[in-house]
Image 1 (cartoon, rainbow, N blue to C red):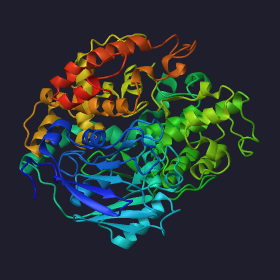
Image 2 (cartoon, rainbow, N blue to C red; image 1 turned 30 degrees about the horizontal axis):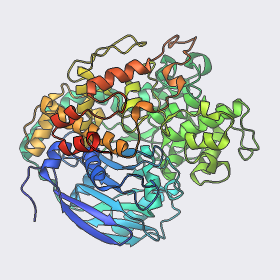
Image 3 (tube, rainbow, N blue to C red; image 1 turned 180 degrees about the vertical axis):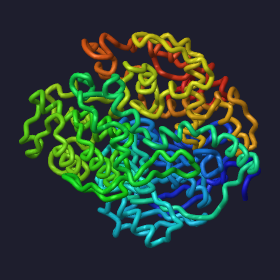
Image 4 (tube, rainbow, N blue to C red; image 1 turned 120 degrees about the horizontal axis):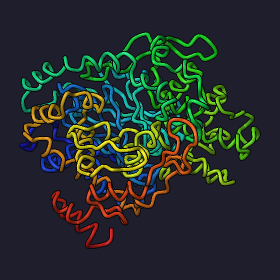
Length: 622
């Protein structure tokens, strides 16, 4: 029986036990939705409550969730997102990854807001959900196939009305930075959750159906869409035309993107960025495409590769993070090799950020004499050697030879190589740093250090300045008084958990637009100020998952290069450094977290209505 609650939700969660081949449906609780919204907010609450600490991330004991939000699959502009959640094989703590496309909306059309998977299958399987009817099917014929092949085979078997999220060979081989792919190249890339699916022998989740998402006021949603769609025209002109690639070349020289494994200066070490200019990349596209419900269309398909690097027509245009991590970070200005590498990662199911970071790490180890060509299977891993990058990526996806040494990320690779190679392993708590330098914009440092999923490119509060309270400071110091940081960070977590695209949100003319869409979908007429506590709860619950695993954000080792220790002596970031201690102290105070234990303070938890969590964290051992 369905419960009486407001709209935006299908009101059902599916639990799948792969070990027992069993399904269980649960009614989605309205109060949990009000408190934690959806997405990783809902996921954090459920997994914190139900999963025992200490589980091996790649064991049957690690549950994984696939979760939508109340705006997913609705008429809200950009309501396309879904989130994967689980314990990360990279960090040993909370993991989540977000993706767009069409899979998320179709999961709701199939009848569920979320699917949680427990246990592990004895042989490869895929989950098929069709109009509220789940079943597990044999996937032996899919095992060993790449993500594109898997998606094509399943659509051919089940019909064009289904959508597929799947792993490739990297996930099957439990590469710890494996991604889950959907819609032929959209990636839930970070946290290594593709490896978790591989450990469970769950090759794919296929969804299809015609269950319309109930909303509180459909006419109001349509009217809001018509009202605000024309105001995105400028965004369509630049982001819709060039995608995130529009910033690549400039970022390499401004100090925004990392150069030479974070150790170089763009204008000196990577002077030729012409090939990576947005216009040159866009000239190779065949057409643009958009995620569900989005008028911007920031994605693009590329022409076939006809030179040294052959790739099929229709492969995806690389995003900024891919271009930077496999470009300036590796001193590689061969655009066609980056398109090839992006296509390989999409097919194998690899996070392009971690892949680029691993390749740069190996190149620096080679430069410093810690590795020889013999160590790397005869592949000359020199700076800018794009041919070697392509060859090594294939080896790591398949865990062949030296590829097996680096397939678990830079942290474990450095432990295996030894020789003080950890000095060149650019990660926080095992997750590789993405492609924005906090010395250029200190807000990235807040996300990299403080978010429960460390080193994340999608958690920058500076993108979200709706309250107008974030104070821009001199880059050497952190002067934000805290109020703006707390509000914008909290609201970002609500946006991410709602199923709305963060790029679309950042382009709204004012933040109240988001509150209007939420009210029209759910029927809960809450102001922006009312939504901020929900974001604080979401952040606190994700952090509580880490605390339960014995992790303390305040003690994470941070690469000196990221902080500017020592600072560069040339280039746009000359003498720029970040004071980590001051950064942490100010932000913990703003969030009302204890700066020594990284626990949300008891008074804050009680203020947020999290009495049980307050007791667990402060009155008895976690």
